Length: 336
Ligand code: HEM
Ligand SMILES: *[C@@H]1O[C@H](CO)[C@@H](O)[C@H](O)[C@H]1NC(C)=O
Ligand SMILES: *[C@@H]1O[C@H](CO)[C@@H](O)[C@H](O)[C@H]1NC(C)=O
Image (cartoon, rainbow, N blue to C red; front, side, top):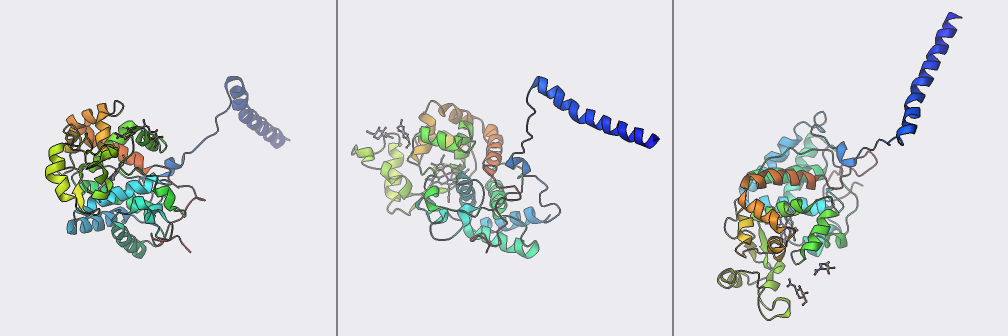
């Protein structure tokens, strides 16, 4: 009997406790559904138990390759951008089959694939089927930035690899001839704002462009029979016209300090030394110009904001849920 009463009171208390918040909430507002965003499932300790050496291996092998060929630092950073820009950071850019992003026209000068393959092979030896290609590429881009003299940031892990890669989608990545509105919209669609756009374009402080990407500026620009007026004429006549003989010839994106991760890239724009039309337009457009001026004059702002914007880039549309994506065994192919 006593047991019955106390059991009943427990039930009553439970009923009251479970009903009370709902009653209260009804009068205030609709209870909020608890939404966990996919990006919140990334974490710094994702591989702590399953592959604690992952980040170190990535850093080691990335460093070895860049030591042998410094130009790979820029190429790896760009590869990460092209991955995240299409279907999010899911390593879809690495898939190597007919009609994949990697085979697109816009991907024709991407490099660094063998660095990622090399890292993946070592990680498969040490922690099979554990570390995603998307995480490898994100972490390697951070390591490449540091080696090039850029800032450090912590990389959250837990991205999975996508199974879809479509060439046509890769061709939507800006190629250098767009207007600023198109750039802003492209970034905005990926959760990146104008400050991110201008800051991440600062990656062009290192690396090179093939002449194919800007040769239309050198003569008969837009049918005017003249070069692009927003291009410095000394730079054009004494340098670019001589150095650009073939589409595949490579020119430094930062003409003054091409191998240093600094704010010279922004200062160059004030002298009409932007190699890509899109970079030069960032300076003249009223929406982005103030950011260019701020970053040109404040190296410490560029450093800290680059780190912030790269974390945002690495979080774009990530696949993190149990039913999403896979851990690829070979970064070039989806798992069988
Ligand atoms: C704002 C829009 C962007 C446009 C229009 C653009 C365009 C380009 C173009 C045309 C090239 C030269 C490709 C060639 O070889 O012909 C290039 C190279 C490069 N881009 Fe961008 N880019 C943009 C954003 C970014 C972002 C967000 C990053 C990274 C955070 C980035 C990093 C790089 C790097 C490092 C290179 C040099 C690659 C190398 O030396 O191999 N770019 N970009
Ligand atoms: C900018 O580019 C977009 C997309 O290519 C185009 O629709 C738009 O008309 C262009 N805007 C200007 C001002 O040229
Ligand atoms: C190229 O020409 C078109 C049409 O005359 C014009 O609308 C556009 O602004 C020009 N582009 C540049 C970058 O000057």
